Length: 344
Image 1 (cartoon, rainbow, N blue to C red):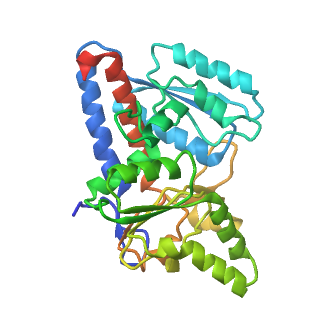
Image 2 (image 1 turned 30 degrees about the vertical axis):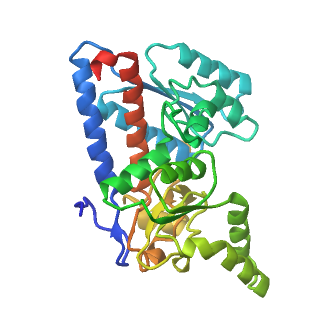
């Protein structure tokens, strides 16, 4: 069993799947490869992040990506655009980065403001630099069985699979339930699990997730209870539950089979009240960014409650997030080696 750097941030018996530990090891492996590249007088890999707007969780995530790149010996280029930027302006930035020889990987931080077309922006990114693995070409290749493999795997699902592998948690022959069917996590996650030999992969679609959210806030009724039970049936029977819906602490203890593995890919910034600010000020559970108040990060799983049922689970922060960043660095290094094959 892997040794965790940190103790579990809950009182239940669930084992902590330590994303920080495994991400640090993975980043170290990438950094060692980059040192070998630099010794051969080849420029280091370069990652460009395009961020639109001022979402606290997005800005925090990009800051961590910058820090990870610098620590690994990569160049980092930050393109921060205002919330009201026009579609054509973002496309111009992406085209410029496509042509930039110093940039080996391009990341469009999602979500983008609603007036922008996420699909058109992702389509603009050169698939050979699409280190987030979300361009239409890479997604299409991933979804198809056979020899047509994508240039890059999407980072969040790739990081999740790597974490399960490094923690010696089997997927082959297991039943898996994924909450959320997004193009970023849910759908590509299901294809990776399919290819890894999972016996069944159930996607709880966004419409069903919205129903669960609605039921949570309404008065109890027999109709709501029956709807909830139908939706949750495959989740409660799953050996592995993966949550990626973007709703703070939606997944409860009675959703999970005893002993199941729970991977929380959600990250939600929850503003702190005045009382909470005094309690958490100066602790690791409080975050701040220029122009924002203090906030805390929580996942899609009610960790304390679920920890008394699950056999193993990730924390937020410190679980899937660090593994996603490590996957991004690994993909960026891979892109650089394809341009300079003699350095790999």
